[in-house]
Length: 342
Ligand SMILES: N[C@@H](CCC(=O)N[C@@H](CS)C(=O)NCC(=O)O)C(=O)O
Image (cartoon, rainbow, N blue to C red; front, top):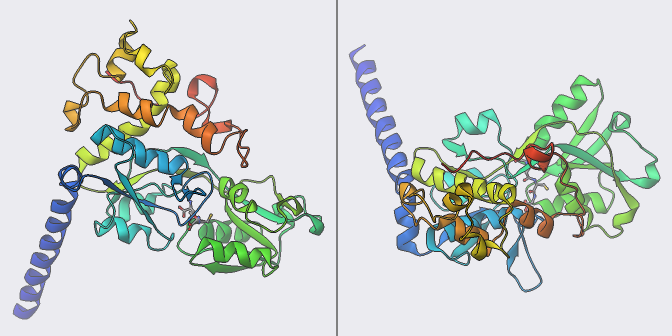
């Protein structure tokens, strides 16, 4: 009995020490970032439209823009950021261990991740849902015709779990063929190893571009899950969480207020109090987060507003050709909504 009590005390001390050291690291992110001189951002290993190196090796995409927005908020310079490509499986460990300051890696906000992994989601920069892609020649028009199919996808994703739910609910057999690297999953599907490729619908459009003959494949109409994709930070560092959260909100508010990378300098002289507060002309909103009051001005000047990042990376004029849909502003019937700067 005595021995048990002793073991319990030792275990409690160890757990407390571990929790304490974890939150001590978490609570210092802003000062670590400032000292280091750049933000270290965890991204995908290459997902067009979200985080992908361009032909000159520069990282581009909507997730990359969130990383750049945070750098612009902290340093007034969106170039002060470095990218760590992470597989789906390794992303949370990289964040928990402090290898990266934040994740912006097409990561779905789920309850298990938010409450069970010592991390916090700061918002949703892209509302998505899981879909399926198949070869046109199969003549399939609905995912309900996929009974008995083999599905290529990635390890450590919500995708595997949703597929299990969907096929069970609809009494269909299936086989998951999961890979750690996304390119392996795409290559396997490309060579006919699987009947279908399944992931977030935006990523289906992105990965289809990598296939030998993209036009020979069709994305089926059904969306089988909710995949709210957003930036993630370590739990226990509210100041850093606020900066990442408001970097996204600044871009959404800028779109709503008509502030763009092109007119932001002129807008500083605008009479609209909401614009003046957003751009740091009035108020001390940046100071409250431990950064400059012109934090949002630098985000909009260098990265742009939400519409600019959407259209540049995934919009109608890009190879992905995605419509705003549910990612339209709330004022246009969509879900993108930011609390006010006041
Ligand atoms: N949103 C889902 C899926 C995320 C995911 O990792 N998808 C794969 C398939 S598209 C991916 O991002 N691959 C790109 C990469 O690993 O570089 C999640 O958070 O679990």
